Image 1 (cartoon, each protein chain N blue to C red):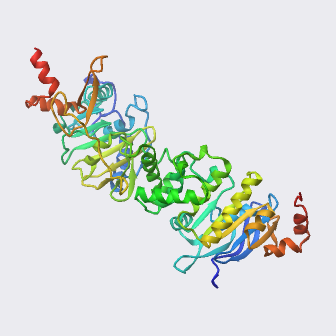
Image 2: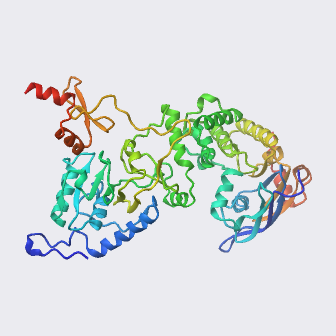
Image 3: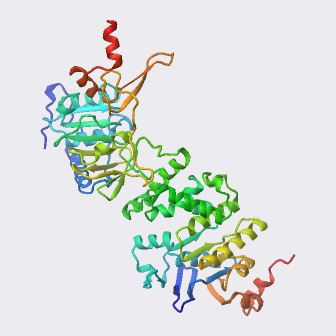
Length: 258
Length: 299
């Protein structure tokens, strides 16, 4: 980890009319760090994630990002062209529902290759080789490269979505409930895969989840949100083992024990 | 402004070339803008025409806006001058504009076309008007109009190659044979209307002005003369045009686009020029293909 944060979030607030989406959220994210945002449904996790990833414009606040060349840019003051370029090269966004992040009508290979073609790769052989390599890395067998994601199971779709995002070697990945809707054994495999990839590639990630187990496995730090406010913030193990806020204590004690 | 057609000439009280002058001005403004930004789809207020969508209402409106009393009009449909669409549009302009019509490519000043570019190279001063069904090359890849406009604006054309990638992955080669996407003047990706990709190279650095009108989709776009038009491809799968094994069965022409004609129900078939004017012209000049020679021998 270097001393400059990759992402600096300053007092980001989003209001939907009178209603609060998220309020006065500030944090820094360092290179190689995985941050989990947890909280119950409706607590503003996804709003916050969308604001940070510029998919949604916040009401107030700013987000600064350290570009590959070392310059620090305010995301909301970048041109749309630059922002979209950043989103498909240096960033990844893994949606809860793979259908939102994938092109369901084109083959798995084309899904993985799309970002490469978007940044100007024009050699079919190379694109296909890279796509096939990435499918292997996310444990999808190579002979499925020409199948459409429709023919894939939920877990495979989610892994395909991850491969599609990581193919350009992004430095920051946003994940919105990456394990939502998957059964437990598939969840475990996916988590194992994501943890491996994050370690190997030295990615930074912001993961939104309501599942504390996911946060425990993947993240270094976590933020607990309630009603749009960040109520607790700290190292994952500290927050989960020694929650300070009453709400966090309630959350931790609500985990089902088998 | 063109003079109103006097009603005592036996014509119905139409304005010259059917559209009223204000509509023509509006369409001409769209055309000028389209020429200024090659390949960019300019929205225009498409009018109801006395023919159904899909019959070339866009092309007809463009032609009606640029045609003058001295113009000579040629209309082709799939390369032929004698098919329904060509005949009815030609008759339409004869009736409402009283202009000279021709089937000879060389003599025409305006050529309205559906599906083909004439084999005869076009010259300076000629205008080729295309009838376009779906102007948006990204449409079947990205259904949202707001998104495709943004992609054009920001020059995000990776998706177009996703389509070509899919073709190669499933068929081993780029199997798209018509409406093959091109990049115009190094900037906008454009759908050349459903012309066969055989005709794509003819658009590159053409001497003639090329105008595209989509009536239902309300878009006009253009390629000015001497503009670079490049067909998209991959480095290891370069763009190729169709090749035919045999020359035209009637005129013996090679390197032209051929149509297959079924002759009987015993598998008999022949391949003839899709450009009927080109074929007739060659036959007049004494060229004969295999079938023509056989016919003469039988007589």
